[in-house]
Image (tube, rainbow, N blue to C red; front, side):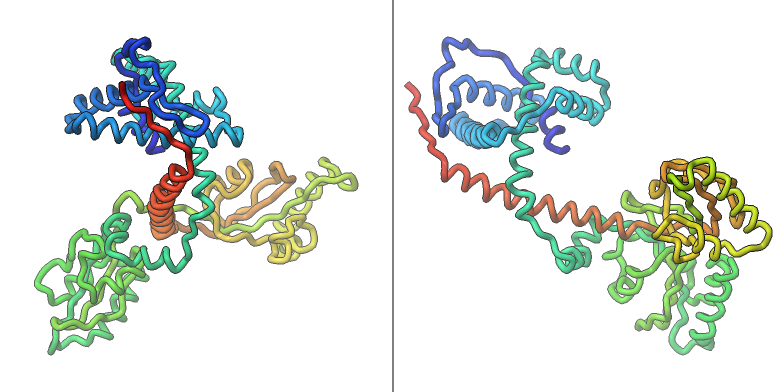
Length: 415
């Protein structure tokens, strides 16, 4: 929605000039025209907003040429929109204006007031937004299918310093240094630390006991490119709480511990591992009979029969039936609303009472929970969007040049 934010800051209707003086055809564009009043209005808009934003205003002839080029390109795209029947409904327009207001921390009433306090027309702004939405729809239709991003291309970008600095989190890494010629054996230290961490002990204990770096072992908060390359190659694949194998440097042997990470892409998700039995009501076994049977199945499990065996025999969920009712690890937003509510409130290793979802009657048992680090997936999504937008701009520039080259354009000389 970046184009909407730009629209809010630059596309407002400014002081109107006499229509009798300016309403003449300035450019013929295929079967359409650009009026002199359109050009003067856009020039006035640019100067007004440049003044408000402290921007330099180019010479009049340069500014006119830029505005003229923009209006020709816009007219060509609007002609395509009309030709292929692109329409922007009032409902879509209203939702767009609402989002635009929210992005500027305003409600609709406040948004309208800001526009009108500037002496601008809210209704004309709405039409400018409508035209921008049409143009955006045309661009998406013409460009989107031309863009391909391979897995290899994405991985190569993720490995660049640019991506790691822009998208990567800051990492807090601690180290245990065993210096050259130390009396300590690094393999013994590694084993002792690994065992202690698995028992829930804090890394501080082992830094104090073993490290020979004359400090706290704290390498500070850094993005991946900020670490020595020798360390970065290992750190990039570590999760929070991981301890690296010994790394050899000129100073000795290093054990690295990833203590934490922070930044806008850092994402953690609570996940549940569970099993369930589903009975879908049908004509042979209607709703009441299904409810009765699922209650009987629960009682049989509580009396010692195998959950897996009963799921394989009775469950109507083809995806989990042959796995004894077992489902993959999943976070919130994966399942039906009622199923998820029962999952979240359940205690470990307790079978729920029968409940009804949109699919039918269930019982479920939560077997385990965990907090999964989804940061790398978030970074990949952001990287894909970054590459897509960069390619989109490149393809769009080429497409617009070709569009203009193929069009009939006649610029009328000023009197």
